[in-house]
Image (cartoon, rainbow, N blue to C red; front, side, top):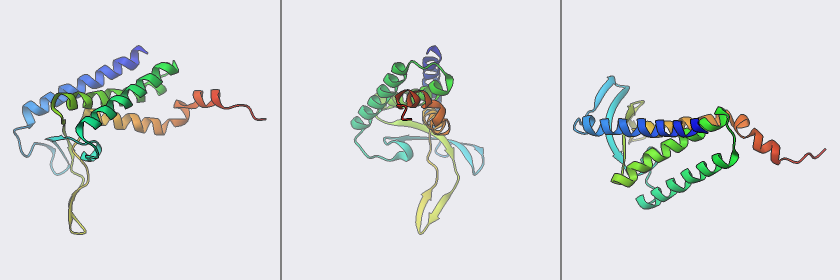
Length: 169
C-alpha cells in the first residue's frame, strides 16, 4: 500500500511542478514553445471544464464531483486490501491525477493545461475544429490509469469477481 500512496504523491508533485513551470514560462508566450513543429508544442491554457474543456456543471459542482470520485476510489482500494501492482497502479494514477486537477480548481477555479498535440486543426463541414485538446500531467495520469483498467480488466477485478460469484454447478 506504500507504493499506492507514493505513486499518488509522485503524480501530484509532477503535475503541480509542471503546471508551475507552465504558468511561469509559458503564460506570456501566445504561441507557446514548438517542440516538433506542426505536431507537438507546450502551450499555456486554462480551462474550467473537464475532459476536452467540456463545461457541463458549475465549478463548485465539478470540485464536489472530483472530491467524491477521488474519495470513492481511495475507499475502494483501501477496503480491497489488495497489494498487487496491476490493481494499485491504475487507481493510484487516477487518484493522483484527480487530486492534481482538484488542487487547481481549489486554488484558482481553473485547471492549467500546457501539453498540445496538434493532430489536426482546420475546418470540417465548414466548422473550425482542433482535434486534440491541450492537457496536463494529471490528465495524462488519469487517462493512462483508465486505459490500464480497461486493458487489464480481468486481472484487476478477477479477485472480487471470483469471490462474489457463487458456484452454480
